[in-house]
Image 1 (cartoon, helix red, strand yellow):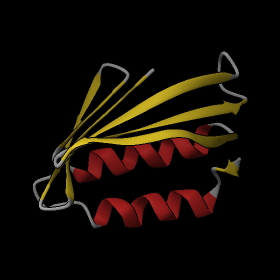
Image 2: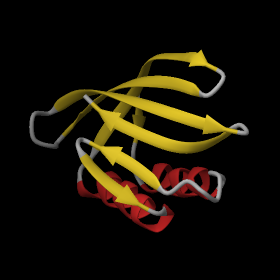
Image 3: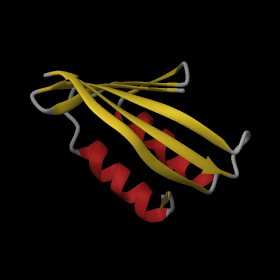
Length: 102
């Protein structure tokens, strides 16, 4: 498991900066964030609001433009643990859309 502290936030911001310029939408637990700044802000807040660890439990590519990564999180957030599925839609090898949900 890996700590989601400052290093994780920095890595997430770098990863977001490499997303395609058109990466404008992420749906996270039913809330949609529009634009890279809003998405990066959500990731930054989520990573700093709670202390947690994350473990990649599965990953697979459905086809050339869709892949999924399942993560198990444990921490001091309400409920203490959750399994999240990150569903990526890719275009030209870059993230076009991301949906995160249990």
